[in-house]
Length: 281
Image 1 (tube, one colour):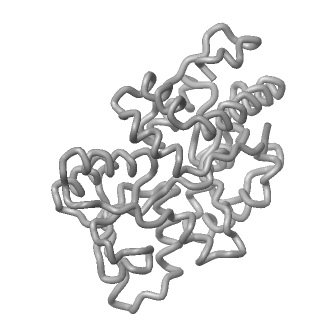
Image 2 (cartoon, one colour):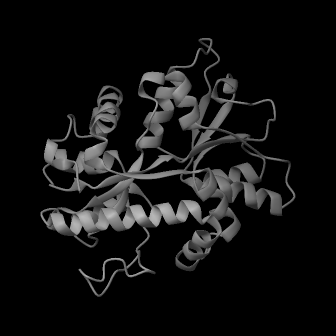
Image 3 (spheres, helix red, strand yellow):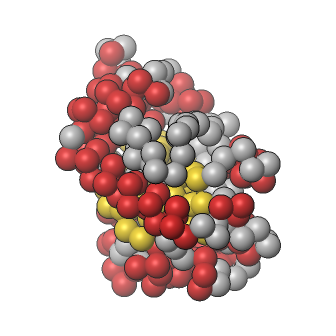
């Protein structure tokens, strides 16, 4: 969108800004330092239910979490019985999804995987590369980054085992879709529906182009995030389900997720479902 000046009708300055954690994103949004942002799908719901009238414009990411292992006999999440799993998530959406998925597996009482919480994804990658971890759940593109670095270093082979989304479909076939992340609009611009529609449409076009042109998209991303190598970005694009849909068109899927979060971790969404006006564009 930045490269194509997709919103030139609305602004002469469209700037890309990288955030590092959901906590940092919340601060940036609260200070009105950013207007629109990619975000985990629970974050705008949490903010809206706390009285900050942000809106969710779309969901574009439906599959982004991967189990990576050094053990070739580990073929799925149920094979983690009795094993330690590195998890670089604490209270956020991936942590709740993982806990819910593992609770649905048929582990013997003393064989549930032990979760080793790491400081962040880079810490988890370092533990895997030094042999101090054998299994890890990572969000893309960090899963692809780990596989790339391990290959470059000539390490013992690592295996991309299973996406959390694939495991979820088997465990919860009635709620098979996981609307994990999308674009939200900050409260000070949420009332500009024309701008929100333009952003949603431009993003959908860009996401479709990226899915169909993985290498070109990877090169473009690398220009803006140079610490990520092009091959890792390309791999991440190819294994990530990018499908941009307006939030109001998938409200049932979002509410199913929010209801599940409300049972498992009510504070993740602010204790209730968002109002109808929350779902954009």
